[in-house]
Length: 288
Image (cartoon, rainbow, N blue to C red):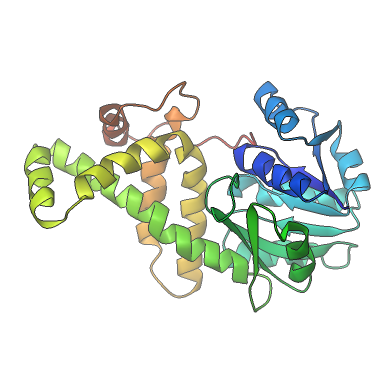
């Protein structure tokens, strides 16, 4: 049995902790400064509460960082500053260069850095979600999840490979969703939305429903996707490719960030109105 720190048990992190628990491991979480919702999730999923980050780092042999991409460096720094001695897995949606930079920060410490990328929803059933891993200690982390609802996949290559896979995957799924929403907003502003939808029904079967579904699915998570799109843009640019596609997608999600705390899934008309509004509200950096 391994003690595995989860930073932090949002919807994804808590489900990953439950997957570890199902394999007989002991997932830990630090409750200091966390929200009531976080505490309730962690309790329901059987995560063991330790109050402080210092205690979590002291008791864990493995730590998984699962947070918004903008906070990835902050969380890694906390591990370094706490003199964590174990395997640190950055599971965040960051560019390969960001992942390699985090690994460099861990050089000359007692930390073994592993690059990770999660594809799929919170892992509640087998076959739904993959954890891609790369780096020298990736296979050791993969063994923790073998047989769990979270399917581990070790990639050939150094740190950065898992993040590259995550960036490439989300570049299409979340990037194309933002593009569809921007197209619907444009058509509405120009007064041709119904004509466009009718043409889609004739020539691109299913696109009407997909665009509407994209809005309602992404709106509550747009505050997280904003930063992820910036990381994807950087990934493209660092590969000598244009990053403007996903810089624009980041702006679309920034305009939707106000739906973060909505009590119910917003109406599609409200989502389009937010996208059409002048830039203002930006995504939150909350770790919850």
